[in-house]
Amino acid sequence: MPTPPFRRLATASLTLLMTCALFLSGCSAMTPSHTDSAGVALSAAQLVDNPKDYEGPSTARLTTAVLNPVAQEPEPALPVQVTDAQGSNVSITDVSRILPIDLYGTSSRIVFDLGLGKNVVGRDTSSDFAEIKDLPLVTHDGHQLNAEAILQLAPTVIITDSSLGPWDVVLQMRDAGIPVFVVDSHRSLENAGEMITQIATALGVTEQGTKLAERTASEVSTISAQIKDIAPSGNDRLRMLFLYARGQAGVYYLFGEGSGADSLITSLGGVDIATEIGWRGMRPMTDEALIEAKPDLIIMMSSGLESAGGIDGILDSVPALALTAAGTKRRIVDMSDSDVLSFGPNSAAVLEALSVAIYAPAAAAK
Image 1 (cartoon, rainbow, N blue to C red):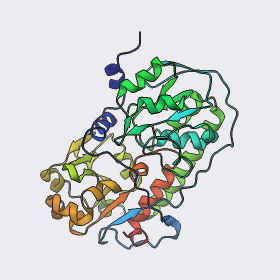
Image 2: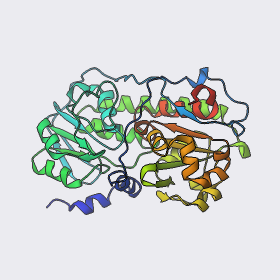
Image 3: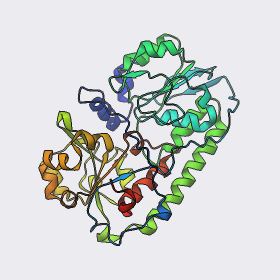
Image 4: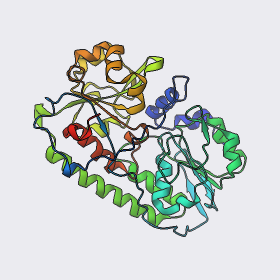
């Protein structure tokens, strides 16, 4: 007997489930917000002498959005029998029509970088890179799955996680006989390689998965070493917070330990305030918490900052922010929603873009 939907959901990361509940509610959905201009490489950027003294906002931009598959149309070894993150046994015999969907577009990016992009038949809202943006959407009202749209595409396999809903739509796809492979919703720099190899194994391209995971780890290691060389140490390290906002609805959340934001901040050489004071998952922001945290710098999703009315708007709607060093110096770094916490093959590029916005902000000034 299939595992009940609620038990299946309970097996996923609590943090990401909380995130999904917020994103999929009526609080205004997350939308991609890529910028047209390319970012500057960290090696070519002019660093500031003291990041704590810098005043003004900046936007993190990837140096390039071009995909770089590890193979060109590899031949999958099928059939495949795999156990997914929910303990379901999945038999995959055909990957000619792949539908990779999740909240951040990570699954689709992985499938394309494995060399199977030509097999992809549809996309989620967050998958908006050039190679996929013309494919049909299977989400509506932001990030809600549309069963009819999915069935019209006749996918032979669906790659997803528990970050999109309603979950009944996923179960409906299984009932329709479509193999559904569910990966862990938890995202961090540490498990990006595992997610890549899981998806590659399910699609019968294990060798390409190993190659892509190793490449991703190598790129992250290289940029992490560069960041370590330029980031201040000791008391000069920047105290950072990740703030999620949907200004129209008055929704403000702080991302804490286990949300992925902690992994990001630590890798950027900052002090992860959430870990320091024991915040876990997502927590509604309070004025007291924000002032107590004493952030030097706030990281936000671009559309979240936009929804709050930009820098001036968020300082007006969150007056406590103006009582912190980050607010006083307008030290807010924003990045495209579909990039900043995606933690996939472009993890290194995300780290580089954010490090430029933080340590060489003039090159990323808004």
